[in-house]
Picture 1 (spheres, rainbow, N blue to C red):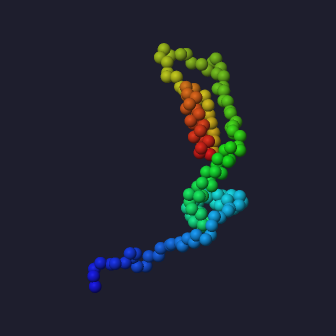
Picture 2 (cartoon, helix red, strand yellow):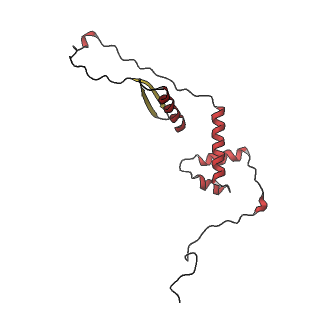
Picture 3 (tube, rainbow, N blue to C red):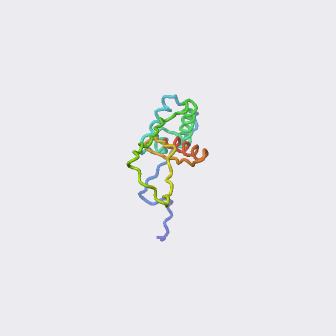
Length: 144
């Protein structure tokens, strides 16, 4: 007997394969079915490919459904605002003031904007450009 193994697959290994029958045609999914399947993909730890396989879909089709749903939600939802909280420093009594030293300490940056979204707090300093502020808000919107 030859030392070469002419089998394509090792013995004992099981492989999954599917037979695709072209007679099925195009399936139509109701809005409720799509919503139910999309909801499955949003559960923590869900794998989109596994959900797609379970329902006889391709992962690409499921990702397309997710993208379309996200676009619909963004188009329907008005811009959301978070409540702004302004914290003013307590006035200091004249007695508590210390005499100024000749040398000035470096000026501390004052927080001009504080955003809180999804448990994350972002503080933007007083010298930030409008483009930077817009980028931070855009990143927060994308994360939530």
